[in-house]
Each structure stands twice: as structure tokens, then as C-alpha cells.
Length: 298
Image (cartoon, rainbow, N blue to C red):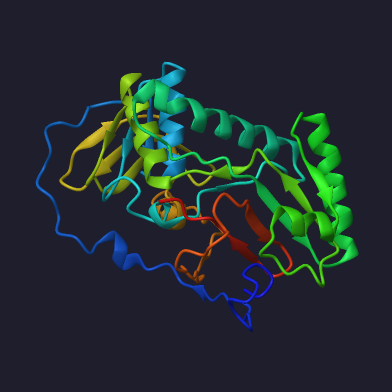
């Protein structure tokens, strides 16, 4: 990445992405488990999927006093969460996104005190780079939006960007948007903290519990969920199911005859050895090149 690791590489090839079909074998590749006797007979809400979204949903339902359980076919974070980047960028074009991300950031900073488990929050800042005037104009708008939401941010000139990030090649840069309060979360620690917090609030999470069917009444004009059946035959009575399956969400939706227009995508990432001078530098994102650079904290 010649822009970001000056002198470390001479060429950067744009990463290609390929569409891949959903592999239904992942739903049936493990042996059918024996019937379980620790599952409840009923719940107000059943959350399907033990990644970051599922764990967060369970935690917040617990805070609301809802009798909720989570079912995960493997182990918590076993899907795509465990190797996600965990990057938190606070400035987005949508004010709803900004408020959701603010809440996530606040929670990432407070969950350890509540649960004793670190979320791995590192506040090293975020830097959006712009190599054209159109992108720089967008960043000016984001900085203005940040003022409304009390998010410190500033648009930097190429020379100011170089001063902040000495390793960066700014020869073709028009500017950058710097948000010092951005950072990273450790995905596995985040889910572990959320899950423990949810359990402390009375919610329950069950691993190695594969959903086999979502039971309903009614017809195509209108269906009502009545329960969830897991492998082994146990049925949990409920009127509400939340699909937090991530890449597996389409297969879960198919259990009630619905389609979710979600397509899994391959992407690549490169892990470098320690680079002198990069410690404590902000994370970088180049929207036009679809590339980000994350500082790996060890």
C-alpha cells in the first residue's frame, strides 16, 4: 500500500470481490445432536445467531426486561464476527447511523466495568483520505454534521495529514477527514462482554443449538410465529423471532418462506509485520479504493 506504507511497497493491486452463493451445507454438516433438557419451553423473543448483532440484540432486550434467549448453531462468534475488522467510524451520512454508532462506542467503553470483560476498545482515531475534490467535499459535509452531534473532527490539508501520519505518501492527496475519537473494538471480546451482560440481566444464550424450523400459523396473506424447533425435536414456544444470522440470514428466512436479498462476498486482507513508526497511528479508510488500514493492537 504505497500511500500508507511509504517505502514498504511499490505497487498496490485493487482488491477484487467475488459473489459467492450461500452454502447450505453449513446448516447440515454437523451430526444431529441428542435432545437437550436445558432449553426453556417458551420465551418472549428468540434471537437466532450468536455474532455481534445477535449478542447486542440479546443484551438490549435484557436491559428492557424482556424474557429473551439466543440460539447459536455453533459457538458465539463462530461465523463471520470473529475475523471482522471491528473498526468504528463515527461520521456517517445518516444521522441514525451516527446515533447508533455513538451508543456502540459508549457501550464499548463501559461494558468492562459492568461485566469484567474487556471489549478491546482502542481509541486511536480515524482518518478518511480523499484523492479527488468530490470526496473531499463529502468529508467537509461530514465534518459539519459532526459539529451538530458534538463529534470532534476536522478536514486536514495534505501537509497536515503528513504531519499527523508521517508514513503516508500524500503526493496525490487532496485532503483527509480526521476524527480523533474513532477506534477499534475486539469482536470476540465485544461479543463475550455483551453475552455476559445479557446473562446478568436474566437473558440466556445457548451454543451448539441449531434451529431446524420456525413454526407458524396462517397463510401467505399473513403468518404468525408460534415457536422455534431445534435439532433434536425440542420446541420453544414464542411469538417473536429475530433473525441475526448474518451471512446465514437468507437460509433462516427461508424457514418461513421469505427471501432476504443478501449475498455473501469474498474479500482479502493482508497482515504485515510490525512497522516502525506506525504505533498509535489512526486507522485509515480510502472509500474510492475500497481499502482500509487498521492498526493491530497486541
